Length: 106
Length: 125
Image (tube, rainbow over all chains, first blue to last red; front, side, top):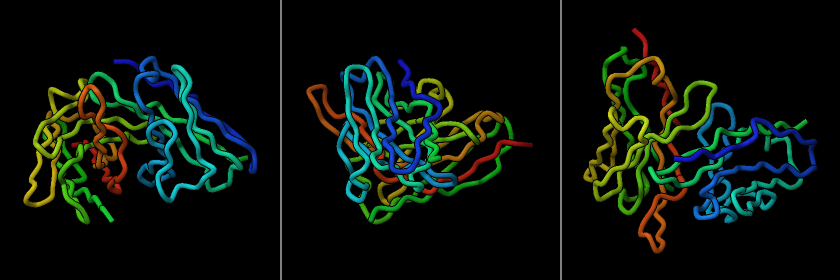
């Protein structure tokens, strides 16, 4: 099994662009998925298959992949985007989550 | 609209078995990976395991010896049993629907598109 590594925290001012990375050796071969979790709530899928956006998710959320790193980008960050973000990807045993990144909107 | 709802005891004694049920409404239990995921207080998400609608299962290796997931398609429910619990098993437990994707290697678990609200299970005497 391998790990998915995320930065513990990212801070941005409203209107700026936030980039949250997730690194893992198998990511060139496996899709990544991203979730947003606000306090006391269940996670919500915001990106699937590296860069696809589910219906109902704002266009400011986008995903990309390059080598062993996938990136969740939030353009024009709003106060309501303050949350924890988790990446997820398949591994040899099933699936796993990254450790999570707390996005703070200053 | 698919909805998932966890149910079960909120308090379990150490060494006993944690049992939870997830009821799925608004959709069929077919063709998906029905999963359990947990989150200890203040910590990240941990995948516990899944059951495919056909009955095949896959568990997180770190929990495999203690986990059993089963499905009752007639009731649109699936269940989790975690044996020999300790305080380290205290967490919010979520049930979730895993999307099935297909590639050259066959079917595999993708993302979790629907989640239950979660239920806090505390292990304490």
